[in-house]
Length: 92
Image (tube, rainbow, N blue to C red):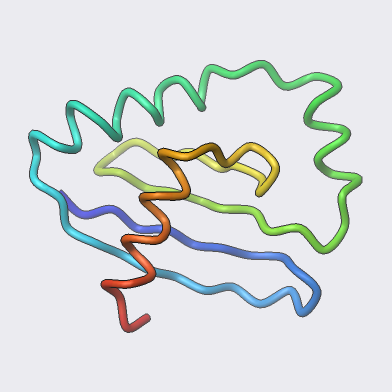
C-alpha cells in the first residue's frame, strides 16, 4: 500500500512530498489505526493554538483512502518513524 506524506509550512513555506510502499498487513495493523485515532482527535482550543505557531510544519499523510493532517506539534514517535522512513526511501 502506498503512503504519501506532504510537508508544508516552515520559514520558507515550501512543500516537500515523500512516499513509500508498505505491505497491506503493515498498513492495516499499524498505520491505518493510527490515522483513525488522529482523525478523531478533538480540535477546539488545541487547533487555535496550533494555527498561532508560525513557521511550523504541517504534515498531510495519505494512507490508501485515509487522510490525516497533523501539525508538527502533534507528531509522536510512530508518525516520526513513518516520516523518516519515507524521507530515507524517497527521491521526491
